[in-house]
Length: 153
Image (cartoon, rainbow, N blue to C red; front, side, top):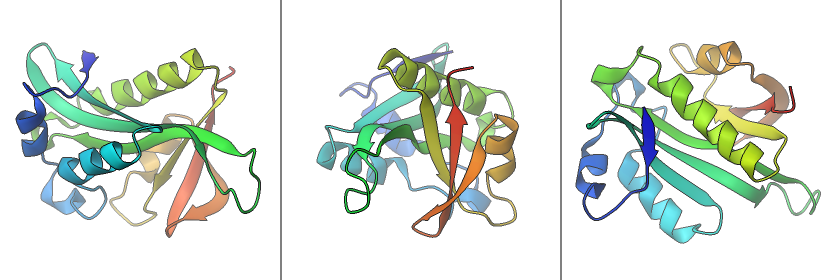
């Protein structure tokens, strides 16, 4: 498995990536994520996940973004912003690989915590993130649960 930057050669394949129909309300399509990556270029870290030559997923991290400048200007966070694993590739470890890759990038930049948000509904990704070691912080962001993973251990 490996990560690749989005390029003129692979962006159309990235745009065609889709999750299962029952997950479409849980994650934005890749096209919206790429638009946000363009608008928030100083914070966004979009990557494609490949297994050999096969595109299996898309991730986008946020790196060193001010979380709530009205409350604590020095509260800067990094974490997983989006994770889209192709419907026919789920359950094969690609999601775990993607989260680990984001955590590795955060560590490489000196970060000690990784954040993620999830919709707390049945069928959502909460169990996935909890199994990876994330814990709910008690915060909400846009109605979603905020989770954190300590990267120091």
